[in-house]
Image (cartoon, rainbow, N blue to C red; front, side, top):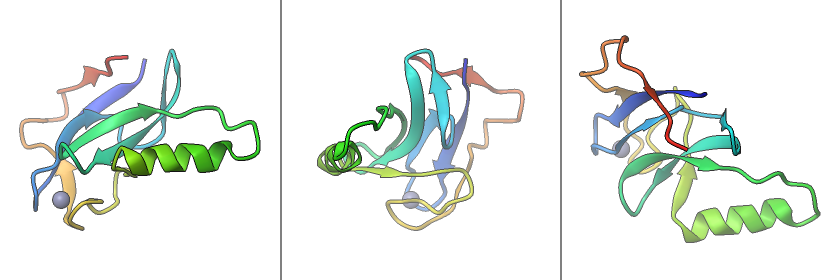
Length: 99
Ligand SMILES: [Zn+2]
């Protein structure tokens, strides 16, 4: 089971409880994305890219859904601000990802 933390952009308030990069659920590998429509950080199941063109198709679906990849340490994909652990996350606060 993946462990998630609460992250928040100090500039624009984008936030979510996510793995903060590549992780995995029972259903398969996941990656953290910033949803530009809802201003949320979300873990998205990534497909196994086996056939030629799979990567392009996945990229296209991410674009349609306005999802930009984000990993811990990277600036906010929306505004370029800093994304930090939420203040209420004191280190003991951990949630299991819902899958
Ligand atoms: Zn931001």
